Amino acid sequence: MDHNLRFSVSSLTEQGSYKLMELPPELCKVMEESLSEGGDSNSSSFCIKGQPGEDAVLCTQDKTYTIRSVSLSNSILVVTSPADSDISFDGGDNGLPNIVIRDQLSQILELTQTVPKLHKLNTLLKGKEYGEDEEDNEDGMNVELAIDHSQNMEHFTYTDARAMIQASETELKSGLRQRRILQINETLRPISSIYLTKIIQYILNTLAALMLNHESVPVEKLCTTLADEHDVPRIVSVQVMGWFGDINEIDGKWKMDVNSVVKEAGLGILKDAKDRSYDKDDLISTWKNLVGDKFNSSVSLDLLAGNYLIAPAAPYSDHQVVKYFPISSLPIDPAQRFSDLFLTRSKWKNEDIVPFLSDIAVNSKERDKLLLKYARATTDAEGIWYTSRAQYNG
Image (cartoon, rainbow, N blue to C red; front, side):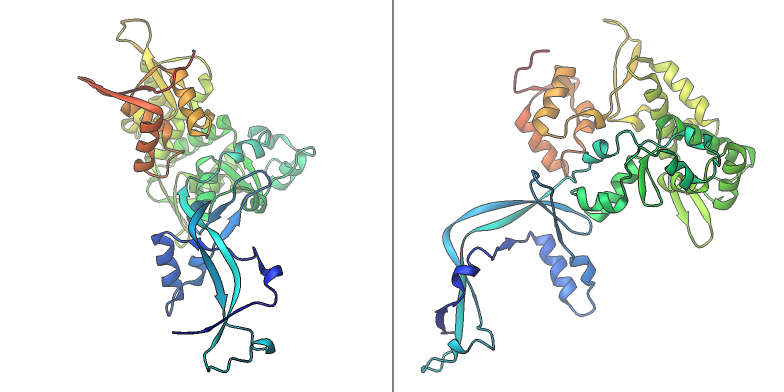
């Protein structure tokens, strides 16, 4: 269809005010569904996040995307119909409709899914741990007093996290859960590992003492027992239950996730050992004693993948020791991550290194790209091994 093509009278002020963003197929589908009749407009809500000095990202309800400028070989014109009030475009005498040139673009914005930038939470929440000592204030069950007790502490809220952390709403909530961060009156505080291990033990002991079915635990009964016998505030115990299972709000029952509880108990033992190695057999024995007879069959080092290293106790020895080596302590930058990993070990088995890459790759395809870029693969009778493509001194 032919048109009369005109330049905008405000072309100088409008120049550079338009951007074109190319949406990946999954976002196009979300947009199309939200625009259809009966579609959920909230599902197509996007926001741009980034503090000064950070590369901006686009966040949907459940994913995070990097934004990259891509140059075009040919420029694109941004054109619109003239405004109804714009009398300068009343007319052509040829009867063709007018369109107005608003801007000229030589770049588009390209989106690529990326991992959420949750590592920033570690810095923002440093020194804000919530531990058992919170119960030592005048009213141990008053969590508001416990917060105010730390007068010199700068409070970091959930609203602050939403604004400052480059992650979608779903990813942020999941990250807070995985990092065991409490929300108390909107204030975010990571729970002390020692205190969390104690609460896990209190829960397991209570289930055994009251002969409660771990798949259908009365929430109020468990909260009351933890508060009365161990001074655990209800607002803390409910969130801990939410981290390690599902709470049915309708019938007030909690279904415990056995593997996640057993995993946390094992992590607590390893963290307590800190920098010293733990005899593998002793670790398994201590771990089984902690979770009790009912759940000791679930104890497995596989649950702790990405949080430990295992090695012979001595050269050529079949006896093994385990050392705490959490993925959370490694750099988030891929190059630095591989540098640290290969300085720790010059040679990695495929199944050993993969768990330490889970938080820097959105899927297995991206993870394999990183391995191809930073590591060299060899295969022998024991399987696939990775060594560094770069040479590190260490």
